[in-house]
Image (cartoon, rainbow, N blue to C red; front, side, top):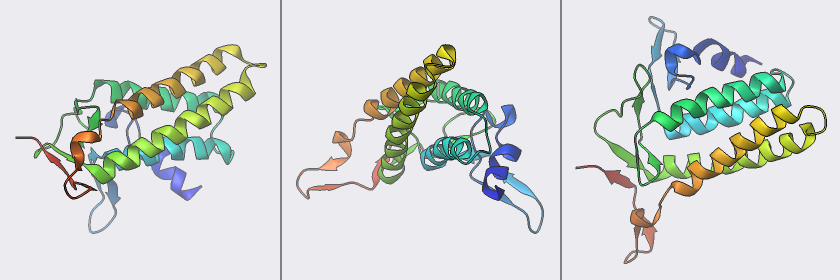
Length: 170
């Protein structure tokens, strides 16, 4: 429950419904008003986990995911990838405009897991609340669209047969 409290406290309209990178209590309370693809992916799965653990009713979970996805749809991307850092005040990319292969991989995996979770929840809900099931299906579809839009090919070094650490926009 304590971990979910972070999301209840810091994810709001003020952060465009996305989780800030961190909260520092000492020496003075400060919220880091930036987020990353890994933060976003963990937020999405934490939201589903909060429902699974009974902390968040299904309609509230669905609404939180929809709000986060609304912000994601407005954020600048490169070849489907989200940049490494965004300012939560206005969702602008923080300089230098960099793509982290690790962060992109984390988010892609989280989005695919979210797609599956939404599909299962939609199937379980379809008989009792068709409208909620449709919203969950739409979220699952959008999660898949975001994940599948990420083009990892340009990050792969064919000579070395390794992924690069990332890509910095010129």
